[in-house]
Image (cartoon, rainbow, N blue to C red; front, top):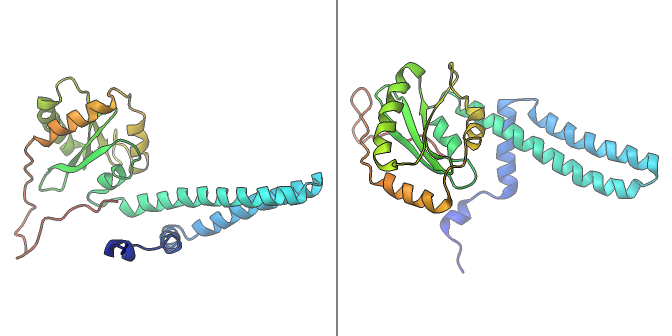
Length: 226
């Protein structure tokens, strides 16, 4: 069976790790030394315990496994922090973070946008409908209220939450956005998710054009999603 073109162009696992390591190094020059130190420290601890107890070879094997596990965990945490630092301040950053959530979360980016590039994203999950904004709190609050009224036309008895992402007072930083949504109560069951998604798709979506004339042949910019 012939490989698909997109499969052949997809980078291998080793190449992906190198790319992520490069991103970590750019965001934090001490990042990769911390990964190596955590792995080697775990291995050294197991070796010392093995020498003292006489179970050297057994604990050496266990130490190698633990060192790899600890190194990968630290690597993943630093990669996530590097992602947050790269996305910070970019338009559509919250949508990129939301689309990286695991589980039954349906993310619709930019259901409402203003000329000042304030944005509201819509998320459907077990808690219900969550509206997540990007922009100064003084401006996005009106957007959230308007979008909440629009959504409630079809939401009926489904709970609708509004969350402001950002660094201002009362806003949720990008690094805590996923965790904040995960802590919301589970109000819906799986069949209800499909039903509410179908209702929401029927809502018309009208986005304003950005300030100033668009260059000839230009398209509306879309936030980068993961």
